[in-house]
Image (tube, rainbow, N blue to C red; front, side, top):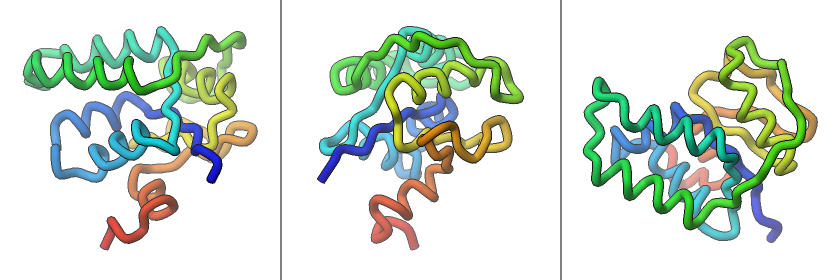
Length: 140
C-alpha cells in the first residue's frame, strides 16, 4: 500500500489537542502512523506552535510540547518553493504551498470554505470525510 501524503490545517490540530476523544485526534494519530505521511513546513510548525500557545485555548504546556515533539519526530519537513495566493484567507495559503510541494493526497481542514475543493492532485477534505475514506469502521 502506498503511503497517503497528508497536510493538516491548524484547526484540526487544535481540536485534537482540546478533544482527546474527537475525530480530529483520530485523524492526527492516523496521519502520524505508517503508512501515512504527514508533511509540514517551517511556517506551518511555527503556526502550530503559536496557536497552541494562545492563552484563551487553555492547552496545558505539557500537552503542547508533546504534540509538537511528536509532530516534529514523525512528520516530514518540506520546504515549499512556490508562494501561492489561492485561499480566501491569505494565512491558509501555507497549507496549499506545503501540499503542493509534498504532492499531498489530502489536505485535512475544518474550514473547507477557505480552500478550493482540489489543488492540483490534493483533495481538500474534512476530518469526517478523511476518516470515512481511510477508516470507515471508526465513524458511525
